[in-house]
Length: 101
Image (cartoon, rainbow, N blue to C red; front, side, top):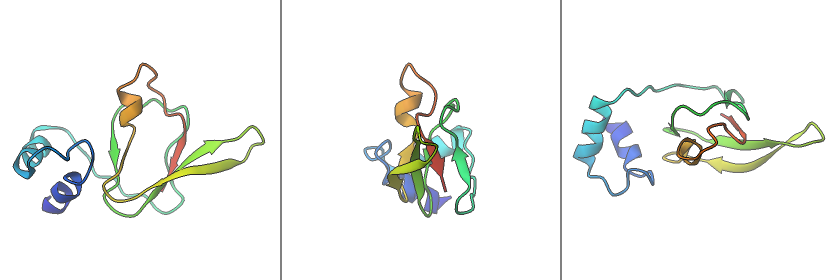
């Protein structure tokens, strides 16, 4: 758990929160850690966003479907970076892009 607390401390959402408070947040909230294989879809474009994802290890790619049927990577997020937070706090609660491990 301490490794996760340290990684969360580097995230923009938690950067001004003391480590002890991050630890308490983890104890008091429902959180899950999921592992994905390289190339596995984490969320599809259009999926409803119900939570925030934070990369604990490795990278995820943010991909956008093109009209031609192909997709293009528009961002790559590494350890400590989050996804879903802008969507979750907006009026449109669906992912605008696909997240791939």
